[in-house]
Amino acid sequence: DTFFFQWRNFGGMSPQPAGFFAGCVILCAALADHRISPLVQISAHPQWPLFKTSAGTLMEESPLYPWRGDFAFDDTIGRPLIRITSPNTRIVPAEGDLTVAYEASGIEFEPGSNVKVVVVMNSKMMTFDNPSFAFAVSALKPGKHLVEARIVLMNHDHEIDQVLACDSLTFQYIHIEPNVQWQEEVHGLKTPPIRYRPSVLEASDQTRPMTTFNDKAANGGRGPVIVTTFACNRPEFISLQYASLKRFMRDDWVMLVINDGAEAQQQRAIRDECKILGVKQVRSDAQLGHQGHPSAVVGELVTWAVTKVLVPRFNSSVVLLLEGDMFLVAPVSVLGLLRGRHMAGTPQVSFSPQGDRVRYLWVGLLALDLSKLPEPASLDFRIEHQGWGDTGSELHWYLNAHPEVKVRPLLHTSHISTDNRNLNVFSQEALHRYHDGYKVEVYERSFLHYGSASNWKFGLGFLYFQSSVDFYPEKTEFVTWVVESSLRGERMLTDYDNVFAHDALWDWV
Image (cartoon, rainbow, N blue to C red; front, top):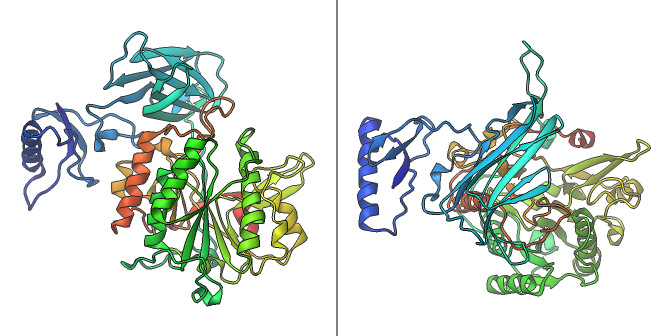
């Protein structure tokens, strides 16, 4: 077998003998007990390079591009693995046809079997029966492109039942003038205005268990914060989200799950998970439906939940709207975020065809003080009725009608990636496990956003929107590891002091 590990200085020993000794111990253990994984990371210490050794033989340092995702940390030997081998850099000269290639391993590809490779490029999906393949893409326009490759199991209807492995790469396809060095365009980062520093609280070993809906003795007599989360296809995330709230919420809180499963099986799975945790769940209105553009579907759902469930039942409470793939990894106080404000959310800006400015808030992480908001029953989070903007853009008209409403902008990193120059957000240990394709985000240095867990970005025509299939199992493993490590008291985030330079943010501060 092949072993991956990083050298580490054990008790003053030089790194090479220590690493060789550790490799021998792991080899003996693996031979003696096959339950021990043959793929081990001894240390994530950034000072030592990653090496590959087979039966004690030292090999070359891994040539993989940094942050592409070197999966040496994980148990990939003996299970499916796929890598995009071309393109293999993030900058690709626009010269002739583009070659796209992949290599898959760890699983047999037999004629007529349901094991396939699915390659998606710019929302176009192609299926292959080969463990390795290369094809040419012609007439590709210069710009940014995304290519994804997955090993999948397909059913008789040629639909994906399960994803076994995934790799992805975002690259720039550009024309380079002779003798001119090309400079990458990257999103700039700004230091936030001093009055809007990220909300950072001291870590504490004390947890705050979920209270009851009728307990109004806390939080100034208004009752607990109503954490309202939306679940449609990933019931396993409910328990992880619940555990993160219990560990890091600094306000009294209760959890309410809006059960928006598109199928009866999904609805039951969500209901059963809530029952195990003792969490209340409310089935979404069956009239809402799940067809159409995801932005429209989500906007209808959130508007229904706020106006038909939360305002009638909790009009004197603070409500936190939370996407089902948003997890706490550090302490936070929702009441602290709202102090002196009516709302706390992530600003968004769109423009009408006439150039009119549309300002609204993202619904994935949004705190509302229903006791202070004027006419809360008129809150509307659908797409603006003339088609401007994304989910929540109709909120623009509510904010225009009520200029007295004060908003606390929530600071965020946007996607953590090489292009965005914000890899410093994660600790070195987390970076060793990170892949640019994961595109997770951090809000207020407290909330980790998985992103697109509803699968709305996968495939053509939103075919797999709200599907139960995990289309990026490696990403799920990473996010789960970060959250669980945080629950154990390990710091996964650095003391970064920058935010994504989104024009919308600076319009609000």
